[in-house]
Amino acid sequence: PGTIPARGPSCEGASWTAKATPDVRGSQDMSIVACLFPYKGGYHLDMYAAFTRKEGGWLAWPRRAYGYVLGTPDKYAEKTMLDIVRTIRETTNGQVALVEAKPEVAGTPWLEPAGVAPRTSQTSKP
Picture (cartoon, rainbow, N blue to C red):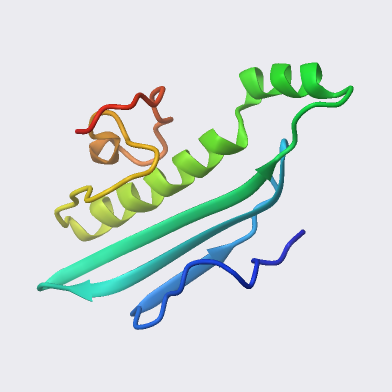
């Protein structure tokens, strides 16, 4: 834990990159990578999150209950990414548009204030 795998996204040509390895309960080896590229008079931000989710075993039920109360690694990654975009938008007063998200993002949560928890994801395109 604590190291970003050698295989992963390439930020070659990026103006700015960030890599984080947060310690999130319920996951192993989480890594979040952000790459900011110059693009058509503005910027293009690519973000990636990868982790191994702990499942099964005798701790499966407590892990699930903990996830309902305090959140899951999936939600942590989603909220972190949304907060990055929200903070950039609020700090720069820039326009933000979603090009692609996997899994797909419902609505326009990046237009809400930073720190707001994401709504339950659905598979619908904004």
